[in-house]
Structures are given as C-alpha cells and as structure tokens.
Amino acid sequence: MAICKTNTSKSVSVSTPQPEYILKLLDLCTVAVSGKQYYYFVRLMGRSASHIALECALQTRCNMVLVGEEVAKKGYTLMDITMQVADVVCKRADLGKNYGVVLVPEGLIEFIPEVKVLIGEVNEILSKVTKDLSI
Image (cartoon, rainbow, N blue to C red; front, top):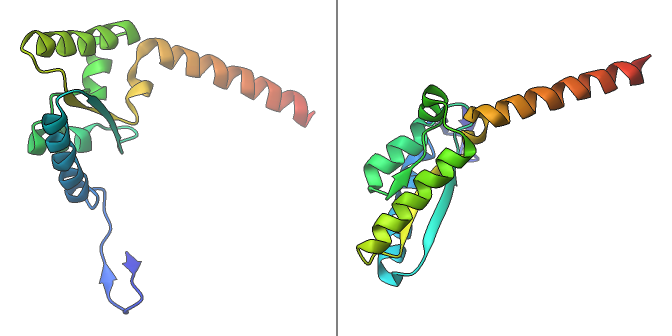
C-alpha cells in the first residue's frame, strides 16, 4: 500500500505498471510501422515470470515475445533463442517488413540452461571467496 501526498491510499501490485507498458508499447508499435526500418527490443519487468511480457504482447500484438518458462521447459539454448529471433526477422524481411517489436522479460536470462550453470558456478566461487575472507 502506497500513501500519496493527498492522504489517499493507492494499491500497488504486480499488474500496476501493465496498463502503462501497454500504452507505451502501442506507441512503439505505431512508430515501428511508420518508420518501417527498425526493430525494437523491449525489456519488460518480470524477473521470475514472463506473465507481464506475455499479457503485453497479447494486448499490443507485438511481433514476438520470448517467454522464460517456455525456454526452460523446452531447454532452449542461447543459440536457439538467437536463431528464433533471426528467423522471425528474416521471414518478415521476405514480406518486405523490415521493422518490428520484440518483447523480452528481464528474467529471461535465468531460464537459459547454460546461463543457469554459469550462475551456479559463479555463486560457488563467490561462496568460497566469502568463506576465505571470513576466516
């Protein structure tokens, strides 16, 4: 619960920024279609779940949304994700559409298997260093 200066209370939840994101994304989609020359990669809030990015994509009809849970379930590597994005860009280019909007949840990186391993190794090294420093 956040208290405003006018002494009125306003609920703040996970879905609070969603309408604002949707408005900004609709504007960006319009800019992309008008300019017809750029791809916009938008990182959206969503550390451990991609529901905000997915809902925004459904509301704005962006060209692509990456979903962390799907990446984890299907075991996509960084190369797989890169190839999926490249395929979408190439297919759209074949249709004469060299522009678009791609949504990326900020927590996507944590769902990529090889990055999970890397994060685990870094955490292990840091815990050893911390133990050595505390002795």
